[in-house]
Image (cartoon, rainbow, N blue to C red; front, side, top):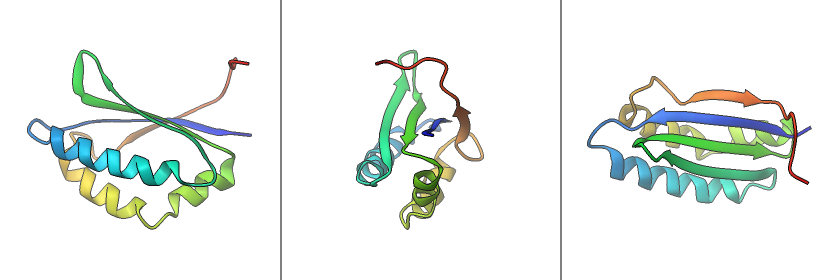
Length: 100
């Protein structure tokens, strides 16, 4: 079964450019992971400092591999002081209906 989640965080005022650079670089690495199916980064139209990242992994094992990737901890360490939350807020999702 696919592992799907939404990660949310808000960039602190004045950190927008650095957060955008970090997440773009990170997204390139995550998208190369064999088990990653989707890693789409969005900002809210009404608040471009608010980020939503929609992630889909092939299965639980692929998600665990993602969590163990060597670039994950350095990304989170760099991101944490730049965002309002203590860390990204993760919401795990279960499918109700899917596009054919």
